[in-house]
Amino acid sequence: MQNQQVLIDSLPDGKLSASNYRIVDTPAPEPGDGQVLVQTMAVAITAGTRAGLQGSASYAGAPQAGRVMNASGVGEVLASNASGFKVGDRVTAPTGWQQLSVHNVEQLELIDPGHDPLHYLGPLGINGLTAYFGLLEVGQPKADETVMISAAAGSVGHMVGQIAKLQKTKVVGVCSSLAKGEVLMSNLGFDAVVNYRDANFRADLKQATPEGVDVYFDNTGGMILGSALFRLNVGGRIACCGVVSQYDTAQPEPGPRGIPGLLVNKRITMRGFLVFDFAEHYARARKQIHGWLNSGEMTSLTDQIAGLEQAPEAFVDLLAGGNVGTRVITLDR
Ligand SMILES: NC(=O)c1ccc[n+]([C@@H]2O[C@H](COP(=O)([O-])OP(=O)(O)OC[C@H]3O[C@@H](n4cnc5c(N)ncnc54)[C@H](OP(=O)(O)O)[C@@H]3O)[C@@H](O)[C@H]2O)c1
Image 1 (cartoon, rainbow, N blue to C red):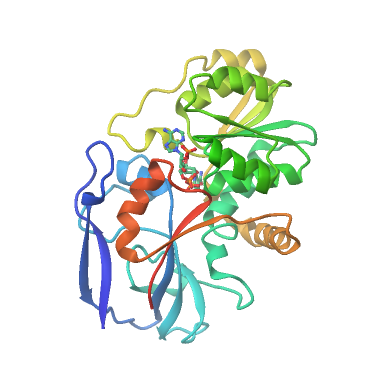
Image 2: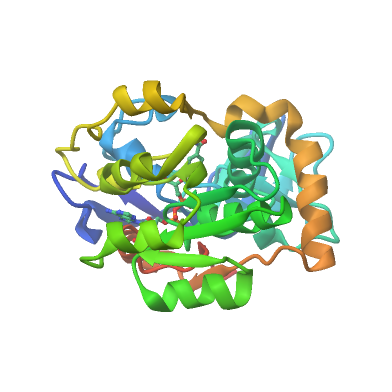
């Protein structure tokens, strides 16, 4: 049995390109004592892994060519030398971009047979938990406040908006097109959406937030963060989740002007977080998110592409804004 893998062939010098990857076939790995062999069903394509390639994600370690591209995945147990996992079980695992992978049990989590495995790459996975804790614990929105979200049509963003609506807030999304905005407003209940690529962005943002912004969930940094700072109300909170506007380059821009002056004058709290900070509370969050999915109060948008060999192009396209919701690559089995 062969194992198709997508390797990082070279580290990007500037914008990421599909040619930074190479596809190889290697012999299937064998699980050792206490280990489990997993066949990948699907992997998530996520913006944060671009920060890992840039070397700006401290938790990811130094970027390195020649290894399998990292990714969260869901899969099926093909062989098990570990108690608690049997052939046919569905699991989450850091599979990376490959068909087969071997894991110690600490890396695995069983998927409840009643759950859609793809939800573990979206609302019940890292990005859903990021949306949940970043908004509720860091942003701390209150009813009737205004919540602004950048990369609002992406995986984290579209879930933040829905969780914010469940807190009875007014939700304003920022994204790159009217078509994306239409999905957010018509299907997910966002109150307004502003296109950051439009020349009138700042004026449009002002119009969409007549009462200012109380919580800004920042997925992008850059110019959108700079604009949000001027809309924040006294006592506003900024949940710094990520900086996707500065990942796909070798020369990230400096932070926006107005810091710390605006923070001082408006008593704004700006707090960075990593979802792993909340690991001990994942079970509670998943239970609530699962309830919202079941009741129809939350919709998971999945942007599905078939074939592992499509992963490099799909990643480049995600960084250019080609996705709506959580992008996943499904694998033939
Ligand atoms: N703190 C944590 O623990 C944690 C955990 C997971 C993810 N994150 C962060 O969450 C953010 C979203 O990640 P994701 O996986 O959900 O990705 P995503 O939002 O599904 O995809 C990235 C989106 O970023 C937008 N984008 C790309 N370049 C941009 C630019 N120059 N300016 C503004 N928007 C741009 C694109 O949407 P448009 O079409 O709107 O441009 C694209 O769809 C990232 O910053 C990631 O690092 C943080």
